[in-house]
Amino acid sequence: MEMVGTAHMTSQQRHAWQALLQDAGLHTDEAVDYTVLLWEDGQLAATGSRAGNIFKYFTTAPQYRERGFSAAVMTELRQEAFSLGIDHLFLYTKPENGQMFTNLCFYPVARTADILLMESCRGGIGAFVASLPKPPAPGVTGAAVMHCDPFTRGHRYLLGKAARDCEWLYVFVVSEDKGRFPAADRIELVRRGTADLPNVIVCPTGPYLISQVTFPTYFLRDTQRADDIRCHLDMEIFASHFAPALHITRRYVGTEPFSPVTAAYNRAMKAFLPGRGIEVREIPRKAIDGTPISASAVRALLGRGQAQTLHQLVPETTWRYLQQHRMIGGEEDIHDIP
Image (cartoon, rainbow, N blue to C red; front, side):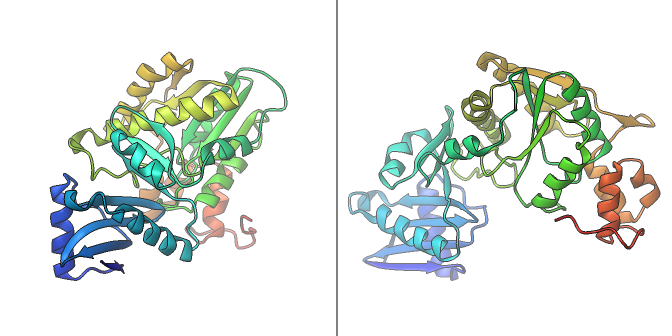
């Protein structure tokens, strides 16, 4: 047995890797950071890869499945991840593979008919939700989940409406650093932009509310359904873990005139969440001159340097942040967001 860990496969290694994955019915079109290749008698017997904190492309050739090769590959992947300080790991798999990965010390987070999400920390999601701040008094509690890349007047309008509609409002800001603005800054901008709303509780999503960016589709037979599958897994996580622990009974969303994926997500929430005791309330988007405000429009204006138009779309807290980071011209003496 020979095991090779690599960030850059040779053409020969990649050919053997793709052939093994294709034999297992897995697509090979997603990027990875590190791959373990386990060879036996000159043949690629087992493999697994890491992309960020997600393990993927995990399979063993049928003739070697009783040899313990899966455990060997998993051990090598974990050690490589730990060496980089990545100690909380996730994997997505078909539900029927759950027991195999449980035997390799991964634990279920949520499952649907199509997909199972697992993590390397037993009870990790329960501990994360338990760590979130709780309202100081009982009352009807709602929630909104937002990316806020960056925080706009549209976001502020929606949250103001939602905050008036319930006693307490959780605002979960997507934690993933995949947008134009860093996650820590986006969360702080939301906090500053809602500081006048005393019943708003701003929290990170952590690694649990799923991002379209990192959701893998390599093991799905019908990749055209990927957005639908991701959506239902996301809602299952929210309904099974976040809502009951935080007593959330309402989910607020804005109408979506631009993105078909987000519009479909809103429709799916309306169909799914009420059955789990969570009412979905859709709030019309704030518009300027008939055009709904969007973060993508802000980013486009930023790229073109159209500061005057951009200023109309963002609250003063976001405007000062843009000035401070020299993304637009302006004041020189604004302190950095801590």
